[in-house]
Length: 337
Image 1: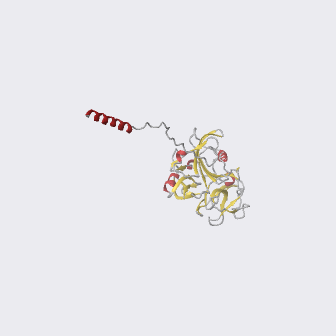
Image 2: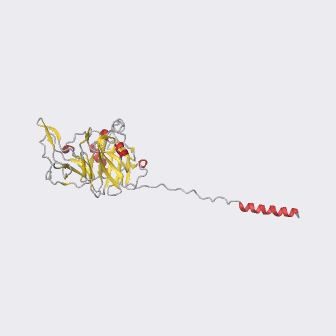
Image 3: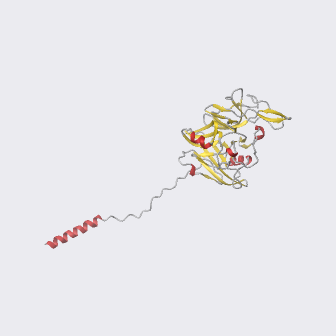
């Protein structure tokens, strides 16, 4: 009887143990999350690619692209920021500083959410020579007169230099402009630049009626530069008329800003002064590069050692001054509201 009880207990324990054995794992493949594909907001020409390493935390509607290849027989390295200017979550903010500072400093010192910063217009020391306008307030006009030699005498000329601006609805435009009158707040734009030229008599000072076809330039924010590169979908480099003394035929670092017909704004920086690998680009090729990206209008900004594009608090192109950013007095910030 005792042996029978032990046998029954042993059988019960065996059945219980078997019932507690786990079933073998199912032979299912691991779940793999496919990578998120980000569609470019512009049509990218050959050689351009998404610079995703700079875009951590970027909202939809703003992207950065890079190019490191041959363009018009010469190797260039460039970065291009694109954003939808009519998207009310973004802000185009030109800024002016009383003392020169680097674009990285402009970026770091700005409050709120800053996404990118590029150097602005021309300057000397701590004085701006280019238009800076923000929130309908002009803090610096485009230079109103320059001195050139005519008939052996120093003579005042009055150039209508280029500027890029956005309206209250975010509509971008590029124009030849002049701050008309005694103050700086009244800005007129003209369908063609004042036809100045070196070694010819100066044109009259621009007014509401000269050059012909002028009208009030309705922008709430703007940055000046020179020269205009593309106007009305045509390459039109007007450095002669704008009386801007820059070396436009030599490959140098360049900064530029323009827009597509759908309102997408492009901010471009081309690395340079690092021969033989990256000497830079001349103005004609710069205009052509912007045209291949789809720009219908575009403006050259200060370049050379001033060129610097900071995205997500990180420098993109290597600055031309031995890799060190040059302090500048104006810059353009792209912010998230």
